[in-house]
Image (cartoon, rainbow, N blue to C red; front, side):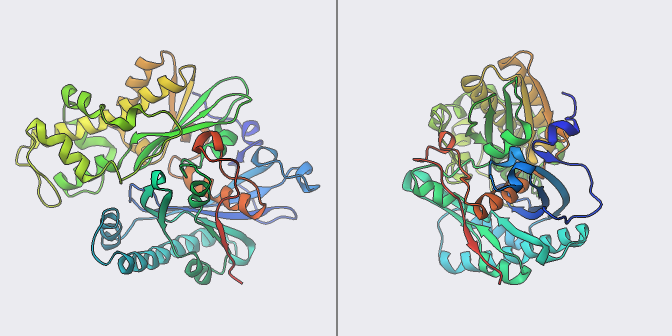
Length: 420
């Protein structure tokens, strides 16, 4: 797949450098994302330059504007905060207090990312229209009509001096939707083509597809686990919070019988709209799956004594992510000719090899490339989407796609926390 040209991005996200962030008509937005993979906080600064048509007052969405990437920053989660957030994914004692404390600590990290971005781009906080802050998902139960992202947008607004838009998912859930995925409309603007079906696979803690068909509203859904189970098992066995470039898993052999059983999980056969998270794919799911195959119990600081077996589990989990994603794409968009991969999983070389093999088998002739080939770093895509969602909120534009989430209709997403 060849890199996108500047002309392609003139209708979406212009990634060419700029001499000055500000401008007569330009607007600056920051997007902050910390995903279920719990690897850290990513932030981006985008500049929106409205088209002449939009300057005259017509809001027709991102495709009528130029969006420019000005800066990016990443901060890893401190180990104590990462562990606290991980524990809050399952029921425990004193959850309200621990959630409040974790939210405050997360906002300190968010504010540090904002400061780094502003410094890198040489902009003042007063020049930024808003921050789109996703927060940290700890519970996602659209079947029970709720989703929880730990956040403290009031504190973030106070610390940064910038208006904050947050709590994007709950408005969609209130309208009967899944609250996820929320990025397909953004993907359509950035990666969509007028003459071909493009599929975007975001591999964070979970994996989700955006199906971008010419002239149609995008389709999107979660396909299953992304990095969450991979990272969990890798940390249990090696002490490392993720499998760098897939080196650990590449040493193992995927067990076909284990994989066949894992794919019997009912979620995989559900029709879209659907979404999932650590509420399903967690340590309990992993233990229930492995126990019948003679894999001894494992957990934090409890690595298996059989190193070969541990590597085989990692390889099988990697294959599960790749195969479930490929099967889902074949089921819902067999005509796709291009696949764009983003998120932390795009940096896992072993996963990318397995994904390429599975996609080639399911969709012969399909091209597979990281979003970097389109000029947008794989780790920046989701953060950029939440900068865009902040813009949609301020302009009272719908941020969800009902065909994706199952909501009763388009809704303006998020709540605003003014800094002044």
